[in-house]
Image (cartoon, rainbow, N blue to C red):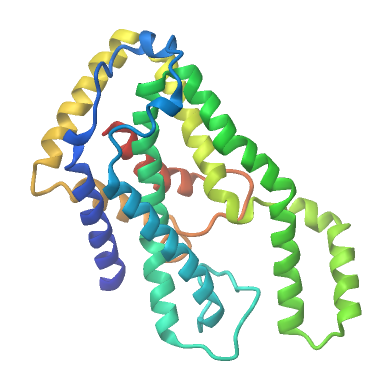
Length: 287
């Protein structure tokens, strides 16, 4: 119980250090929604301006943790999130269990927080149409392409790894089993986004955010966002700022099957993941 709580506290302390750099962000006219919708400004001219290098460092460190975490999965002694890694090394150690669990606790919330934070910055600078076009090219199209190319290869490698490491079957029999599996109804009924689940949920959050922004009356949007900004400014200057995320995060974690964030295994969005990662995305967007 103490270890997960420590991870949550440490994660949100680091996140709120970034929140306190809110003054580095330019928002010339953040509440003029109509002018943003009509903007035809070139996104490439804005994306290199006012870059927050702390966020670049945070994303780079998080990506390294993701790589190390997936590499360490082959050496763990337990199942992580009720998932058995396809390739299991004969040499395992509990130190890898600790590393993978701790890294998994806060890495993905950081990615969603940064995505929300940078997403609204880009939306304000380039406007609605350019923003949608940018996300279509950078996220939606790669996701769709990956779903029909990368994801089947992930399923193939995972199945092959499990068959090789958990049975003594000869390779021809293994290949026949894989061939039969990909033609079976089980493969299509259990098809999911695999490691691309982050992009899948990110598209969902962007879609829901755009709906709220576009279909909220302008006067209500302006008043509401000013109040939210004032509240967040007050919170980020308070010593109690970590509680803003800690309390709802701990509450949502009780919806998980294990102590810590589960890994989505279904192509259909699940409410517990929408609540957990949507919380961090929303906070990033509202700053």
